[in-house]
Length: 189
Image (cartoon, rainbow, N blue to C red):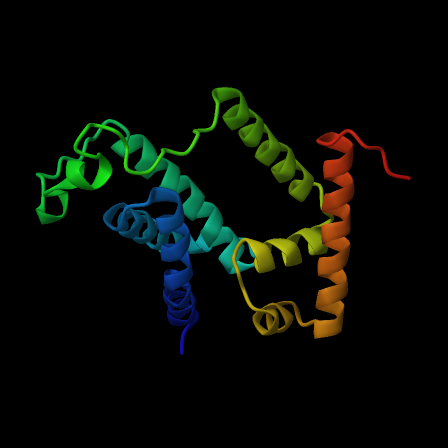
């Protein structure tokens, strides 16, 4: 088997994970398919540029992030119109009583200040994750972001499960300390 075939097969094996990540971000199956297809094409075309400074999956997920952003930019002005379907028949009757009141009281929505605070929290969390030392950050992202199981991570990094759990514990402790310092304002000693 040639190296080119091996590279293509590795990319093909990543497709389900890439598709899941794209669908989480785009919330549209067709757009996610487009982003993943463009990602795989870009990876195949850029195989020579892959310096192997990182794992192949990390490099390909990086490409996917850019393709997802491209899809969002491309589609932001598009409106999807769906004519009323059978499920919309009697919608008002299910939501409102005959006298015009809500059947169920609507939940309170988040205020703009709360939404902004949540966005800022995730920015701080992302900065804290970026500050994790190389191997700890990599293990944490493989487990929590890529949702790889322990066995796959251990095989990929050639570490024992005990070492994996210690590294995940250290990563979580560092994240906790970083968030306490930079978000919650609590200095730890």
